[in-house]
Length: 124
Image 1 (spheres, helix red, strand yellow):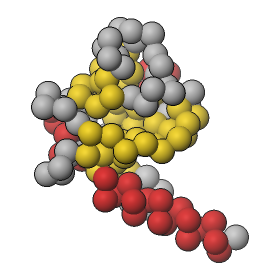
Image 2 (image 1 turned 30 degrees about the vertical axis):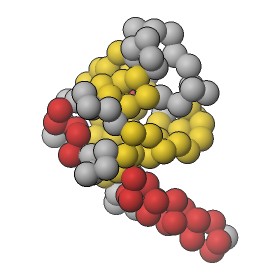
Image 3 (image 1 turned 180 degrees about the horizontal axis):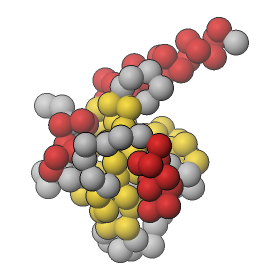
């Protein structure tokens, strides 16, 4: 289960460490797909194959679903053609867990998402 918000740094090989609270068996495959959240922000969505396949069926995607194995240091490799979604000069990103799936945002985009969701809750 993916829960929480974490600031992460991409390493030189474009791997991102999953939060320590989200331990996976080593060599587990996580499936990634580009996505747009409810506010129109670009992100990378990750989960198990069943969840991601279901999401892909509901939307049209120009990129394929890609798997990334969790390594011994609890990291996943961001595929080359997904990197522009989350990479910035400081190579920082925001990991947000939503239960069955997570999203990776470029850091500033992650902040915008949190601001938008906060405004939405204030309106309730």
